[in-house]
Length: 349
Image 1 (tube, rainbow, N blue to C red):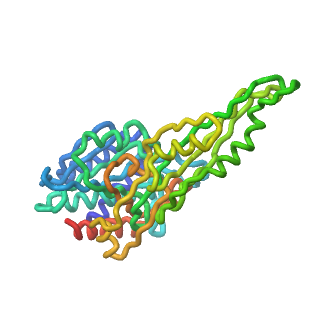
Image 2 (cartoon, rainbow, N blue to C red):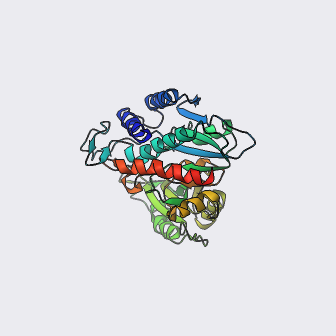
Image 3 (tube, rainbow, N blue to C red):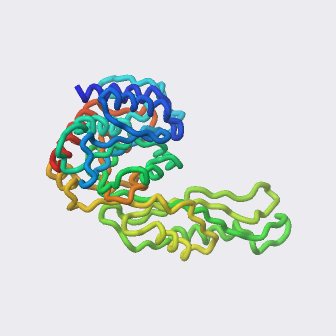
């Protein structure tokens, strides 16, 4: 029964546009779920959270988190992204896979345990907003108002395998300066002519620490912009460097290394999207392995970046379907996800 209710909840959520910062309707639908099951909850902006009925401040707390915002549908959609249709065991719709399946599975799991007494851990459920754009009203801004979190399960599509590490992200704005002039006159300080050397330096960036889970730090040049007229040498070239960070480095260390190795102006947009991990010997990881799951490192970013506690990324669905056209999740993935979450928590609660 709980499985079917969770699927119906996801169908309803899909029917409401919930782009980052515009999640009012999905927040109201989640409130309805809490009210139906007599779950005491809190809301700030479009974030909702609840603790188990017999919360005990003397016990450690496990956070169950996923998000209810979505990206905007891309132009390759052939279906209405807000119609939650079911065909051949697939539930279609924007946000069905990322991360609706994980979200409703965690909500159902929390509901299952909500009124149970004498749990070894407190449970804290947070259905968060603005995950897709790491916005100003996302999980990281809510954390100071929540009970102390000892460890977390963050619901994202992982095919129910255990992502025990996640890459962080630092985006750098690079500025290569020169001297502007008329194109007809000699100019030995044309910033565009310095560009090949800078690109080579980016290709030669050295980050010695390689993670067995996440591999090396991965810098990628993603944007270049310069000039506005054919007959004017520009004063500068602007570039964007995307750096995916393994758990062997802090973002502050990456900032220093990039600054030291590139001969241009370097400015990090933010250092807050840090990598995350959990000890492979942590009880929740050992419980998942005992139930037949494998561990791996995830290259994609999630709300884990806003947490300072050990965290595990785990959920139904396939990450390769995220942000794709005609997004879908299999119904059996949601059902099996709920069953696995419950079995996993039964191992430690």
